[in-house]
Image 1 (cartoon, rainbow, N blue to C red):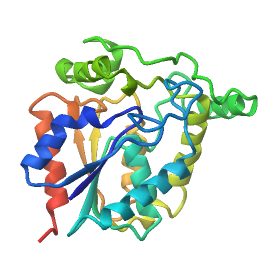
Image 2 (image 1 turned 90 degrees about the horizontal axis):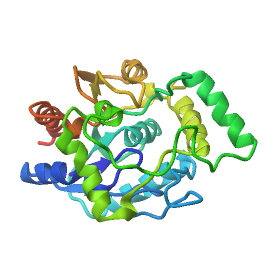
Image 3 (image 1 turned 30 degrees about the vertical axis):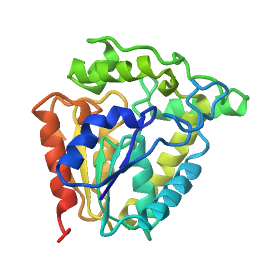
Length: 273
């Protein structure tokens, strides 16, 4: 059985192709919408504001879900986690006592690209905005969700496949409630705080679950170098790099996407008996 943890602003429907592939390969799958996105209850001052309840709340939600899952699944529980989901999974595993036996991290959010200011200055600005009471506002340059167009900058950051990129806009066009805009200053401030906790001395070193990091080399959203550095601190972790790949490895062009999925499932299947 595999538990899928999605990224920020993701929704279950975006993973329809992958869910079919997993079931066809003989896996049971559980997937959910994080609190604040998809069809879960929204948290911001409007449904479009990408707010945070505090990353500790999401970690509590993950523990609750895993307890629910243990009562319903016979056999090992594995996990595949993308971006923000990968961040939260790493923090969960570092805390110990997890029922998850093996994990795949796809472009995990171990650092934020934070262009053009860089993470250090951006973190200071986010903290300042929260202190001055602007934590519920969109970050500079942010706003409500906008439909993507083939060849735009966001597509180049996410995937080289224009058809898979367009799939997100198709879902939101048919089900507008799935749309979520950019992050707020409060989300960004919480993210930097949680990143600091994940990267603290002894935290990645405490992860005892076999982990595979699948890393794109063309990622404009998260800091891939920070993720590779953290992977070196996780005992026994392996890293596979994908040249030319964008942030959303499971929505990349073929044959790259199939290679990613095959590597992930091979890792999860090890030790299953």
